[in-house]
Length: 323
Image (cartoon, rainbow, N blue to C red; front, side):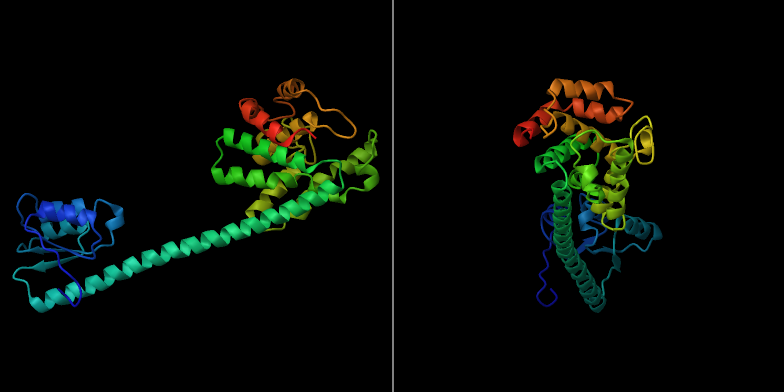
């Protein structure tokens, strides 16, 4: 023993290996020549789990052959002692390796604590971003005839499509959270155009289309991945698969995927929602519209993902209504 450190000796190496594998150890000292298994086999079995890679292993041997040392090093041995063992050398090496082992353990603990602090800080930042998005989305909503339920339904549809397309969970979450910002640019549209009850003139329609670029300009100068995603959606959700949309007449895969997803979700909800100037379309009619515009207005893959998830779509409608 060294100070308060307790050694646990074993005559049977297999029993010792089993004990080491099921207990928290700071250091392993193993002979090369042992019954049943040799030191190399012991080291290989003990260090087979990467979580034990930082635990020092000393191999004691009478052999001075390079091959044994090379093999032991390749398997993860930390140090060697040659028989007969010098007591002072033994105690010094063990003490040094115990210090190193405990330092590694403390570093791991600190890394776990730091990772948790980073996770909490990141969650707080994301939550503040969500709050900012909600505030800005509501600001745009107050200037339009759209309702808060529209934003909830539309973003839920985006989540459904993105999940069906097997996007990574973190990207699904970004699309879901950023989608309510799709029309933030309407803040910059004059009331006489935005709130006009009748059809727009060609000039007024041109003014209305600028909301996509305005939304981009509001959101783009930001390092936040969430707001960058919102900027992409704002500028691209009126693009069409065949290149006839606006503002940049992008087509096909040149349109950001988040914009293609939002296009399907936004149009479907607009068609199936009650607005002051129109009644809600029946669901079957709205679905037929998506099918008939698959490959022209909409990305075929996004339409297919939506149509393959109608049970989830219906659940969203039931939850938030159609107003």
